[in-house]
Length: 321
Image 1: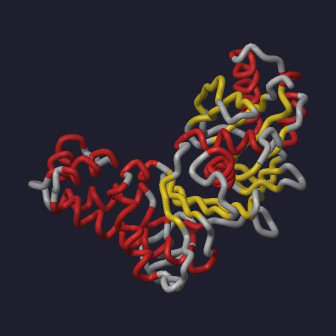
Image 2 (image 1 turned 90 degrees about the horizontal axis):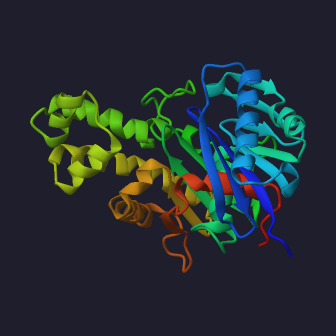
Image 3 (image 1 turned 60 degrees about the vertical axis):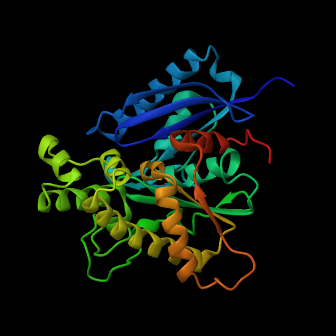
């Protein structure tokens, strides 16, 4: 039997990533183009269609060689109407993006939430492979996530489930972009970590992160990781506070869902054991099921930036489980 291929699309606020994915999970060709924000939905659609055509050409394939395409969008995608119902960072509301992309390409196209598809990617070909149930928590600009149960995305009655970042973990706490206060995202996102590090750096200019901040005007996640390895006290104080809230949120999720596996993804997952070990300790101490013989396995997502692309390709049905 000849190899089957699918097109995976990961639509982000900065870049639109595309890849040709083989049925064994290999990415044989990949590319990206600037999203070009701000732009109208029609312009974003044209940019996406052009990127897809270029990717297929780069792989020396034709659209007819593909079993279909899948696209992950940063918002709510109604899979019954093929509309992006709401994507606030794109300025897109009730726009039939998926249907129009299908018309433009002339092949089957299925859409979903980008974090859901990252979870599906990890379940299909990453660190969640073989699990009966999986949760992915992504720590980036915000806090996203996805839930997979028996191979299927749990998206709720309205395709808007798993917005982990918008559960409140500190009543009346820091403001969140969603309009609430004290959200998980406001404490556990990469943006929250760097914001608190910059605040601490300004207060302690003689610290390692203070010197970085004075020289560059900002503190990145990589700067924090370096400072932690150098045992910078200011960085450790910020990170310990961050771990407390991250562990609190993850414990909440485990207490509610009890998945077989929970994976942490996003840029902050690159901290590896520096992140994972204290989170595990926090969860072990506070999880409701701590006396059970079987508990959720907590790990780091393995596919990194490819998770969304592979998950998008999985929507086409290319992979066998």
